[in-house]
Length: 322
Image 1: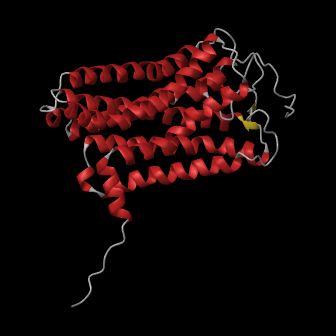
Image 2: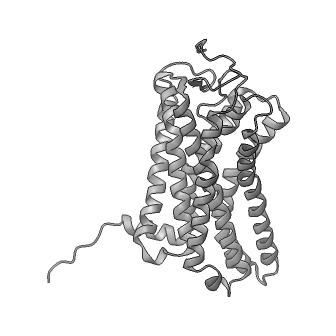
Image 3: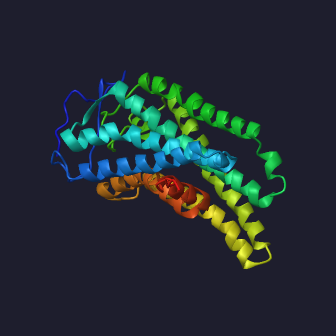
């Protein structure tokens, strides 16, 4: 068990210069054995998502709304995994628990920007599938390049515009609790819980989180309710199967991203007595598993992506002179 410095004490006026992170309980050896899985997960995530980006960027036939959103999903996955790695590897390699407050707030900003970006992209993909299945004849006129560009700009404003004030607000909040965080990385809910009751900026922080992570799942599942109703009305089971297959990868990505997050929120809200290792592991699943699994899901379930990847990986045949 690590001994935390005495300098991190309750402070009723301002933020202390450092935050303390909690690693995986019971894994105090440095370097820890979980260093290898961490690096492996990150490298595989980077490789898989970079392959998706490479294939979509180079193939003009994939320059369509669905693949534009998939491109953004891969960007958010790479960004999220990269934002988490500094503190995770610092704990695993050297047991570094103390993080400067400025670095902690910076990590928090990027983690939540890319998390909300992923949530926004999943919502856009659900809208894309709902329009394609429920209004197939109107799809080309509804989702034009201009509309897709505006959706992308709205995502950028939502991620950056709403989250940019958060580090500055949190830096000037009064703190009444020791600045010891319950995860291996800096997260917004962790930091807000350390603030004194009644801090006005906590209201804005709560609004930012709920406006994305609370609203997006409801809209996504509403979209799939519409899709399900349309699929029930299709004549043959073969038609339903073909239409359902186009949504299978996306629905799997949605469940993979939101189910651990909802479980974590319920555990914290209802104060369920869950062992700390299980709570920490669930947090790792929420943040680290989607960037690893999403490229596999879309490569397996989406025929166009799978064929383009295989085509790019095949060695080119050199014509022999007759």
